[in-house]
Length: 393
Length: 161
Image 1 (spheres, helix red, strand yellow):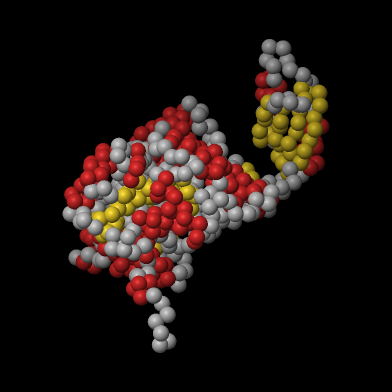
Image 2: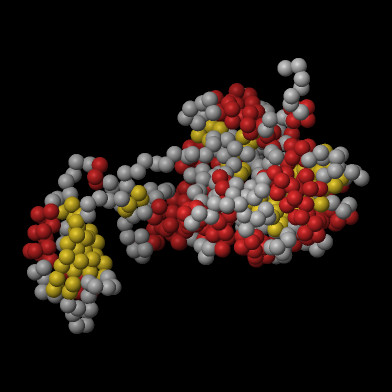
């Protein structure tokens, strides 16, 4: 091919570290995996039934670009009830194809070429590439284990320049399981306001916190007008495959995001929207969530204890469904650790480096698995860690 | 803690005090003590395996018998229920609302044996004024466990972001 068919900017973009690892894993058999980033529950039956009914009734046409009005209203009510943030369902809520689309829309709506976007790391794999594709420049903000992977004012201060436009705030965090409590958010809100930054707050794990409730940064004084809240149904209601999320933000943001959304997507899948409406408005909503949250919480303790008992330092996650133990004491890099663990003990976990360079020395283990699988995996990991430590001595 | 322990044991009565403790984030001693107390108080009345007898050689039939009885002065249904539950064939007895009074679950090695139980033991009790026997043809789900179904495999991708 003499002509460069592929855009250089896309060609240059690295493949997700997860993808690379997946390619290795999928060649193997009998693997116990702790690598999955989605719930092990099925979508509650009444939610699935509602989607089936909508199909039976022939509700298979497009909805309005922004999404069905009753669903937008249900989302506005839900956000107000849960996080004390008010949005006008008419103008300030947009239904997206997963929160993932929301990330893309938000960044495209706000980024001028060369704008810098602060990206908390370690974090979900999509943020940086989406910033690049939107023409922005991603600037990593490293969070540290000694700060419980929370973001501090000094982390931000060091990286702010006159080109800084926005900050992506991914809490509760995938992969660390860290949360930002109200006091932590208050601490960073001054510097955000002072530098007039837009906040893209990815709160997809908002329902999955343990011991304390999630606080949305949009509920803090001076933050509502500059914050785009992204959320969705995947994690709270075990609906990953439905691809249903939403963005809530002041009118000027939603107006422009809707414009992009209408050209590239048209509307989120109609049957998914009916399912989402049922998930949010059903009397069983809180019970649906509680059942899953309690199960995750039980497993969370088993995981943390398991890693600590094998002599690895393991930050206690307060949200999401991941633990992020430190494996530096084994002398291996994250990738070496994961590859050897896979080949030698048939256990798949994800190298921390998939979530940013600062994830080096850590591994992400999901506890969206049955207690039995978790215990089985922990036993194998323990055996592996012991062997490595013996080799080192 | 009591209810949390019970709901774990109800799902898996084999779960050790250690793993319950780990799951709930409390000490194993406290869990063991609580379980012992509940056994003494008969909150926990026993532990049993859920068996799919269809997968064994054993010949058996299960019947659900609707029983109508005359309640007795002073004791209501309790005395008659107490008589019925003493038969070793009887696996369960429930007092019901609606068109009849007691549900009696009976097991026998064949239909004849159950029929014999109904005609010779159950119907002959004075207070019993009528019975209707329904035989179980297939057990799909018992004690919350789906029978004869292979464990659903994890259909998620092995690794995902």
